Image (cartoon, rainbow, N blue to C red; front, side):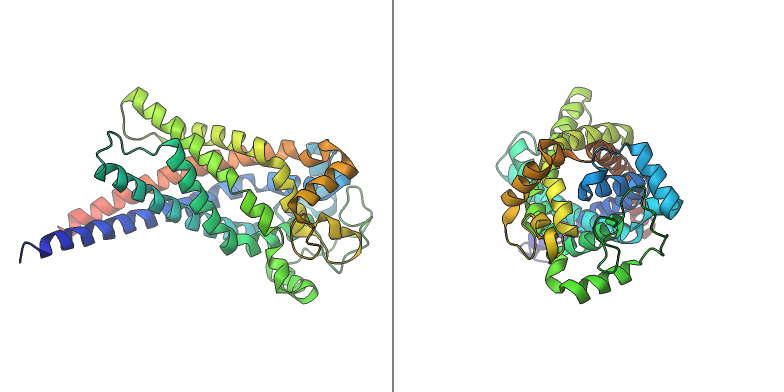
Amino acid sequence: MSDSTKPREQLQATSAAQQGDNIAHALAGAGGGLLSMTLTYPLITLSTRAQVESKRAHTSTLDAVRHIIQREGFSGLYSGLESALFGISVTNFVYYYWYEWTRSFFERAAQRTGRASKKLTALESMIAGAIAGSATVVATNPIWVVNTRMTARQSSTSSPPDEESLPGSSAPRKRSPSTLDTLRALLRDEGFGALFAGVLPALVLVINPILQYTIFEQLKNALERRRKTTSVGARDAFLLGALGKLAATGLTYPYITVKSRAHVAKKDGGEKGQEGGGSGSGKGLLEGLRKVVREEGWGGLYGGVGPKLTQSVLTAAFLFAFKDALYEASVRARRRRAKVAA
């Protein structure tokens, strides 16, 4: 074998190993997302309904739970879970793949320039989050549109808006539509473009994972320097993930509200104005924000903030903890396979 081919083969082996590591991170993120979503999904249901139903904005969490169980049974707290699990697995797989790809790019660049530490700087963490977050929006927005429609109980065949899915409604209980039923109704009534309602707010909300992962990475780096270690455990990941998500969600919640309303907006009647930059009205994100403030006051931008913060923080904390554990398990499995092959 010539000397010229050795570096090329080494480069190919390194690239293959890095690709395998990126996929391992992506699979661990998808698995962590499935587990964390399942644990915290009832809070997602409560938060979504509080955001899209103005009459629910001042309803306590316990009252909301009681109303849902009275009208729909315990399973009502898990309405739309099927599409949510599919959505979170795809979202996390795409996100973590591109995040780790960008991370490895910056680490190689740091190594080439002789930088003392290969750890991501705050700016590099923000760029990695922006690239990964943007990559997931187009791929997963249709999934979350369907999921939000299901959790919000917005259906073109339902009762009039003043009776639709409101607490204490005397309407008879109906069979919950499946994910496919919701998708078919959406395409039939509003067309393919409705799957991309709220894309602009979703792109704006890329700042959420940017903040979340930047805070997480910098806290993680600081903790590793303090302990003089190269990694943190699942318990540390749980706490750091919670802190990162708490800050990110608190700052971006008004945009989360507009995004949810865009997903459940109708293309006719008085609901047009709730699209907030989604399909149909074209009034834009800022108009959506102004409409909420004009009709409901500044507090309207934070409808359901309690359940949402609780859900987001717990989901992120469990996600980081589960992902860390799953990734470490995959590393051990790969090492065992390598020993057997050797």
